[in-house]
Length: 86
Image (tube, rainbow, N blue to C red; front, top):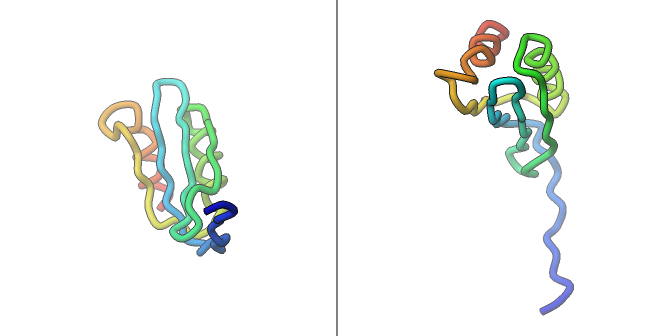
């Protein structure tokens, strides 16, 4: 079989954000609940980066949840920021 392709799926507007945390930078991915991966972004691991990440993620739709690696270490500050922003 050749030429087989999947139909495009329209984004639902409901997203989940996954964040891989590191000491100096965090890398985030936005996943739409129906259309999958939408985009990725790298930000500094500080308040300015957190604000940029939150605004960027919100531009894709309604944020359902964040999945953050290392909430007891490198992801702790981001987790605290997001909880206080909710």
